[in-house]
Length: 131
Image (cartoon, rainbow, N blue to C red):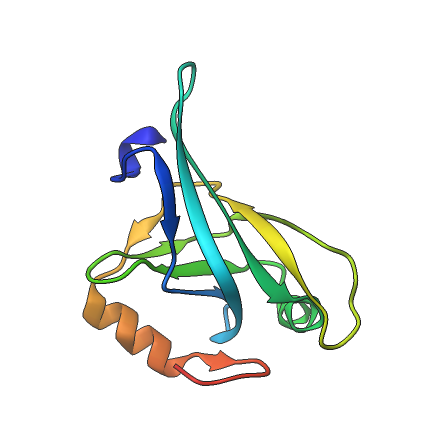
């Protein structure tokens, strides 16, 4: 999978990240960062983390078990991770936020800026702002 990661080894701040359900409902992922590491045996790997409202994420999962992750790294660097592996906390009290970790299960798709902006304009953020 290393050939689809166009970034050098290091940590990168994500300007905006959202977990997206199939019905265009989403949850913001705050303080998101991705990390690219070089693994001598498996090549370049990507993993990330960010904070989410656990209760809102559960609400989103009620709409379906498949979530995508949209990442805006600034400029033309906008990506969609289809059904990434997600691990997170298990406290579901409203208002509580915890860190999740995400790992791609397949190569991410770069999304042209106009298409990304169009998609974000349709997204309904649970518990927050739109687009």
